[in-house]
Image 1: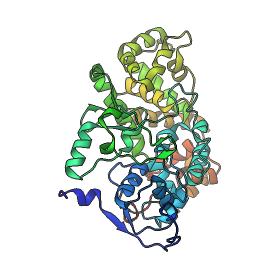
Image 2: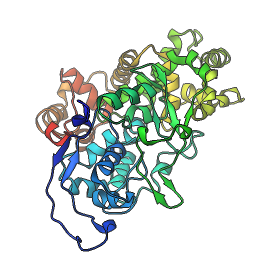
Image 3: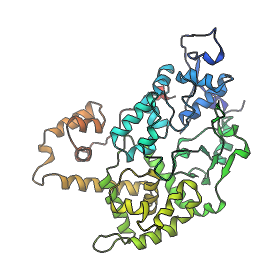
Length: 417
């Protein structure tokens, strides 16, 4: 065992009631004596795959039954189901359903561009068995990007993790549909062509357990697009760094127009110079069409202008996040630059929505909002709903009061480690 392997195989001791021990291995549903700890930026699927390799279980379904209560709950590496059972079986030591959904699956990638009600329904679906329609609710099949999320890995990360930990694991950031370069090593990601379910045989896979012939590499010429790809990865990381983020469609479009103006893409009257925008966009991003998930770029050549026209001309909030990310990456230098612009647009929108003669402090709901968020521990979205306030107005009032909002809905470190 190498020096770092104790970290990779580090475990939390756990004692659960033993049942069904006189039955076959496949039915050892509730026998858990240890748990691996989450590694930095690790997906839930990856942790379960490491648990399987450490458990000595012969069948993948045995591990699934032990952790989730059913045979194939976590075989979907992007959106594993039965998280409420997983929380109960692990006694919440690895986080509750909310934490797992938003921080160890791909839900957080889509959440900022969806209504909160729909994302809450997604968490409920992940908690139980009702995930069949989740990808349809998120609009993935009709997005021209697809609902599949191929497992992706960085060769340099794998090499480092094998040398340091004794094994490699799946990084959450790498799995996001808009991310195709490793921000740490600036290397193009490779995708796995293997499947975790073949001919009704379930498998748990980790990057170092996949054969060389089951990896597909991106064309080498995409290295010329490393700056744009790195910017996309930075925006994905920015999304991950925000708690309970819901991007307001109107303010988001105004942010894009602000970026387009700075780039010289608007006329003096404020209209989009779309012919020029199309030409400049394709000049910068056309090579990304070599990535199957970015084939939607071709739609910009159509008479309607495709997704680019929709984002710049209409406040459409439910287009695939990868399309939003690509526009952001072309209009803004980095995530802080975009966030400053978006926050300014939200503030402008809130001011225009208020009655000019009314001081926000005169509204009794201001003090109630501050009490609910600062002292009551409620999320800003929940407090806004309780007070019948638009979310962006509530956020503006909080900013006016000088309060830095931090989402309280995360488990303690002792539960995550």
